[in-house]
Length: 149
Length: 122
Image 1 (cartoon, rainbow over the protein chains, first blue to last red):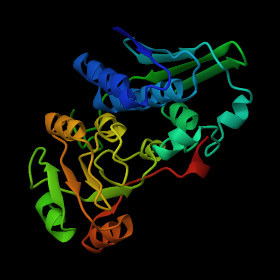
Image 2: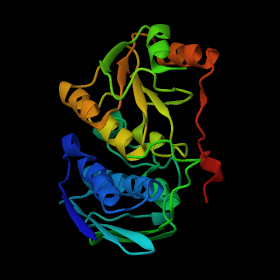
Image 3: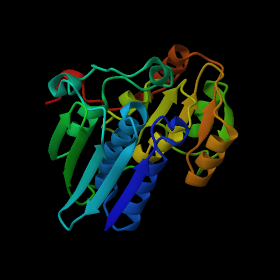
């Protein structure tokens, strides 16, 4: 299974629609609720980053393999100046308009990282950013899953 | 607590009834910043928020949030309410503040959901 979503810059009104759709597509494709939830969080944070920060938007690509889900979020600018700083929980360079809407808590990249089993980020100023997240698939634990959708 | 008891306790208007009024609400998380919501680890959670952006219901769907209580008299757009109806996620709106809403629910047995603290992140 493969899904590709194009995300427009500054399109806050539609922010999150692609990620909610990705979660539904994964569930419909037989992915467990646990894994679909993790993938949805990774996709949402990536999608919102593209909306808030990217110059020309970007893509969220999802590939489903028998043992894993791979999500690649990519744009062509502006790029991240200090990746270690950007990965620090609470650090944010979000503009005021995004903060006023409830974004910019400085948890985007850390949330992507914590919900992934493999996390790679490559970014260069002027070239863009590519984030690759791998989620190892597992079956649902009925004791922890309170919702089946 | 069942949802109907929560509605009575915080004097909420039910905007989207969702699945059923006997829905068990036993854990909650109160926050306005959506990225903080996405840091949640517990799945059977009710969200208490003053954030009425369209993203709230999308985040609720992704996280399997079972119900949303909007505080301070806030109400999301009709499109958001309609989407919640489609998804079966109950939406409530109370004029009470977030602090008072949390206090009332806690005093009646609703407990915090598990949330991994920032300092424990690797």
